[in-house]
Amino acid sequence: MNFQIFKGAKEMGFLSFDKERPMDYDSRQAKAARILANLIVMGSGILGRAVFQAYRQALANASKSGVAQETMQNIRRGSKIVAEPEARQILGVTEHSSWEEILKKYDNLFEQNAKNGSFYLQSKVHRAKECLETVYQKKDQGTPDV
Image (tube, rainbow, N blue to C red; front, side):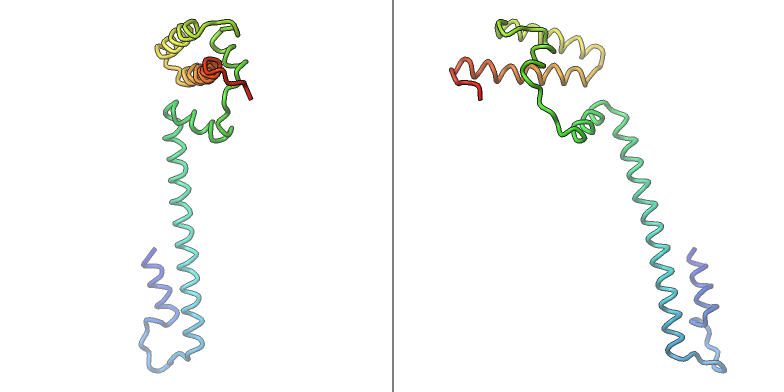
């Protein structure tokens, strides 16, 4: 590619020292501008391809692990917080369940999904426990739900 630039510059008269046909200033300036424009176009094409390849590689790396997939989904969805009814449904408990019962269900579901390798389900179970934990802390403190 560099040879082509050199060859193009030579053909335009930049590298010739022919005293019989000297170039005037305007034609040299126009040719220099043309060469500069070609360099910019080629450079931006190369840079664009490099950025595109880096982006594709980042997506490929992100798709290899479940953690990266969940992170991408959370970014797309805005990282939703689990509501109390959904948290109770995930853990299979009712409003009258004790905190100890919730912890037993949580431990059981979390361990089952750890064996199967489902990080997404583990995350759902953990978020459900976090949600109910705040609800039970408010109950213990006597703070009303807002």
